[in-house]
Length: 151
Length: 114
Image (tube, rainbow over all chains, first blue to last red; front, side, top):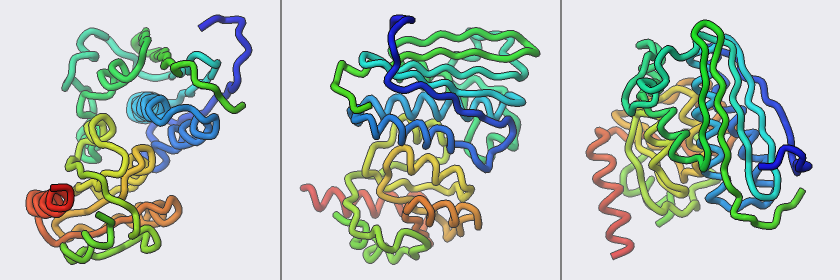
């Protein structure tokens, strides 16, 4: 994605840590935005999953955070930025099934240790950086397969 | 096969989405881990689960599921039902276990396509 490229859509969505009641709302909004642009179902499906898992991670492990969405004709950029506990060992966190989720989180069906793996496998580009006690930054790019888009 | 036929065959209790029972059910998925359902279920699936909290509605909406079947006679939480009504997601209750519910739905769907 070129930095100077004028986006078709650009938006920031706030996510509140610990608020499981509304978890998924930001992803639903992102899905609606992408659907309206006339992107293929497959691309919308991938981006919705990436947004959802990122949102659930912020709700589960951070005080607060945001998801930034930027769409250009060739790709969708999703960034998840949070202020929270951060991840001590990213390699370990990326292992399927590894999770530091509390029992409360697991009871709801979250914390299966699949979130980051899912994000990685559904994105074309995936970057993660984190600082313990500060927060985590995720950057995902999903290619749109150059379909014509409605702005 | 539409949702109404499955509701009738399994004697499911319809808690929301009464106006969506003509929805075509293309397949099914069983799971209580939301990430698993997000990654592996498909559009048009009927999702069988024992989770009853409101996050199941977000998952079903994001994945364009035909509906959610709660097993073992589990009632949806109050806010789950409110959200399902708002989003137009059918929530159905089965008195059977998850195993039996999924098995019966599988049989119905495979008979139809055989």
